Image (cartoon, rainbow, N blue to C red; front, side):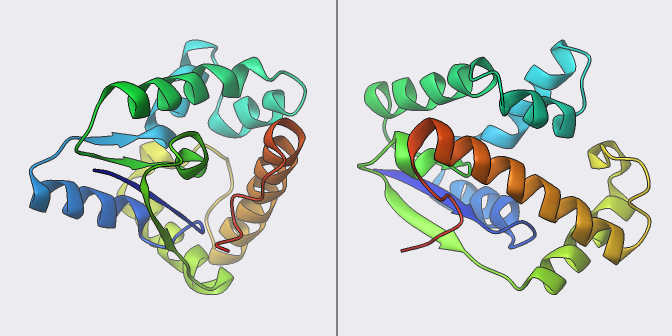
Length: 156
């Protein structure tokens, strides 16, 4: 069985996926971490990397191909990513939702304790996080609709 976890920013995807994988004794794959590594290899922040992806599909393709291959070759793992359910269609899909305000509050709290995740300058208020999250959602949706015809934030 493969379990894909996706959802709104700040919904608790990472915490849930980590705990689920630990409880099952399965590996966990974190697509956001892989994308951050790819961005760093190019000397970019994740926000810059996502922006580049709006015109360069290669930024998504490599990670997408990884997910697709993983779903074909392995079993019994948890994968956390906004599009993992799409690239591994036979996975058990879990979508976590949260209000925009609560999601921004949770992300802000996390950034206070984990400064290396603060890729954007000026995320020193919940409102700044909310605005940054809106920009990221717009970029994500643009890429996902353009490349795959999907809305990763629509749980239906």
